[in-house]
Image (tube, rainbow, N blue to C red; front, side, top):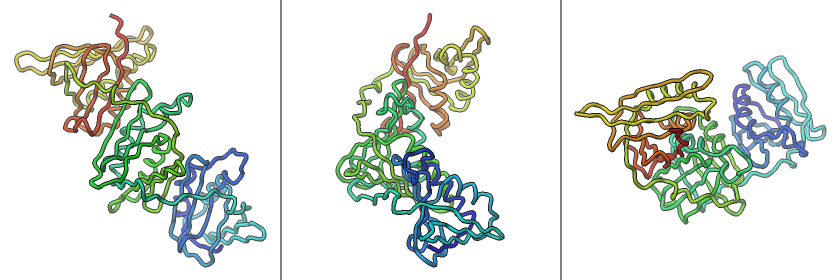
Length: 383
């Protein structure tokens, strides 16, 4: 293999694929990054057998070939090189990769590329195509609710359903639920429902954030049922992940079908007030009490939030709100509501409540219940 590329392009490519490297493994090749020529470009790839990432960068290819190089060493070395052209020459007999850049001339010991796992090709059976920025927003509005406790592996994933041209994603950790749905505008074939690891989706979101902002970028989602995998194809980047083989809970029954009180709240003032409230609720499992009172004679309603700590003190905040229905009182884990408000991306939200012991439902104003719904379980009120 003989190939040349710019230092900044190689460094950027390794930052994209490097998160999939497995540094400690009984298979040394999993700690390496694959460098391979591919139709006039340089392909970089890494995998930990759960997630695999491939990135293509522009290059001048003289001779085709492939090799794997220790990821940590290659990344640290390339990041310190000047922003100039790097010439790479791999000698199969010695398994040495020679790199020349400016006045630097270095040899790195590699492992035969034949030992590197094979990446799958896209499937045509279950495919969804979305605008990259919209898909990133969709991911962020769901994955925050997934569990991080590995003792419940099913809940560490995101239920993903393709049916009748609609993509629906849902995540829950048992204390909160987020459901996001979007119409793709085209038929997606036979219905399919899978569980995608939340960590893999977070990685897809990160990669989308690194894509060039110029022009319309798309993401193609391909479910490869025979391999129990899903492939995300982006401009010059692809990520494949193993699916979670389990049955996701039937979350539709958790979402309340009716409410007694509906409160419309400005998102940013509520977020600011909650951040202050949680400073005084750390020793009470972040409990923040919501007291909702409708206005009289055309006056706005009032949301009063209180939190207290036996060691630090207490806090009270009042917000003007629009209230439909009777007075209500409920308590939530303030951190859970903050996580939601950080991704809601709308100036106002609605909070629907029934009673103090029933879940609260949060939706962005102007967004239909079939598009974005969050459910937060209440905390017990000590009266």
